[in-house]
Amino acid sequence: MKNRKLLMIPGPVEFTPDVLQAMGSPTTSHVAQIFIDAFGEALANLRKVFLAPSGQPFIVAGSGTLAMDMVAANLIEPNDSVLVVNTGYFSDRFAKIFERYGAHVTHLHGKSPGDAPTLEEVESALKSVRPAFLSITHVDTSTGVSVDVKSLAALGRQYDTFVLVDGVCSLAGEEVRQEEWGIDAVLTASQKAIGVPPGLALAVAGPRAMQKFKNRATPVGNFYADWNEWLPIMEAYEARKPSYFGTPAVNLVWALRVSLQEILGEGMEPRFARHRRLSRAFRAGIDALGLKQVPTRAELTATTLSAIYYPEGVDATLLKAIDEEGVLVAGGLHPAIKTKYFRVGHMGSVSASDIMATLAAIESGLARCGYKSEPGIAVAAAQKSLSIEETR
Ligand code: PMP
Image (tube, rainbow, N blue to C red; front, side, top):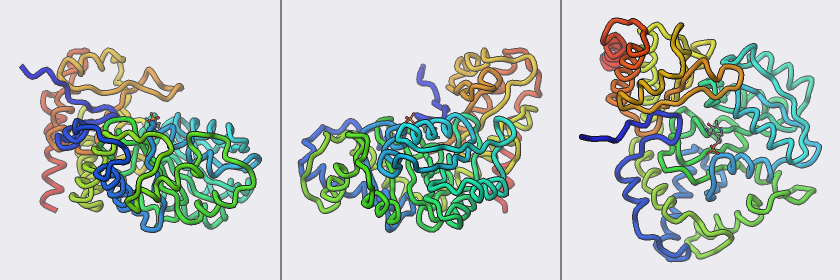
């Protein structure tokens, strides 16, 4: 019997066989030419995946939180002001990091968990606060809320801010266009839609951000994250030359090289479209089961994950019931509603059959918890959604 479960949490996600095989390739020296070539290729391809033709990519061993720390440490200076468009737990985290580097943070929340401030509210806060930075969590993994980064970044630019985007739960799944949208720095981690096991912090800084970094009046207050150390390393790898600051995660870089090739092989537009199509099908299934989602408005729902309230009479025991059906999903994370909802990741190499298997497991899990629904209703709704789109 196959005893491997389908991993449908919002990261780490399922990885492709070629990525996992690359992880298992022999570890070379970090100055071996074969590794330098792989790192150089990964940097160049990262620019393409981030749609950041003039950006400076950074690939550093660490999790997404390090990528946040790195962006903040290198761009924020004491007494800078930051306006945080706050959509949940990870917006709070970025704010705490900014404060650690001496920034004054103003939070702008939606009305309740699952909501987001409107563009009008953000504009009026920009007018009154006049911040140096606008911080945006593209998809807050705690609420499944996705904000309109394109319009927010345009507003941020209009009010002369540097625009920082946490794209950990969006990049390479949900549409992000660093250069075209005027984002100054955007970051992610390897374990989500980028499709590589946990352990790589990835960031791209645009030319304005790099200039801001170079013009700093104060030293970078973090040793490991300091771009003064990492920039020459990234430049050396792209020039196919050996270099050293901290030992790179050699096997993760093998895997990243393969994953970025796979992502570019699919194409960014088809990849964004696949995430849209599969998330619509998943949501059709969830709606058919009569479950309510955490995002308060349809336009706020992410394509990379869904956050779903337990129905009346059901609690977190549902997670175990779904697990027993062979699928792993995640519990709640936002402190205000933590025990009331669960989360399902559908990003990266996710396929229509993963969506069907997950919906079937949720439906059976709900039935075990005493929730009544017509057998097969979720899968049927998802199938219908997919077939409608196919005939469009
Ligand atoms: N930001 C967002 C939106 C995230 O989803 C996460 C991880 N779930 C992080 C930041 C932090 O990443 P990591 O757990 O890899 O440190």
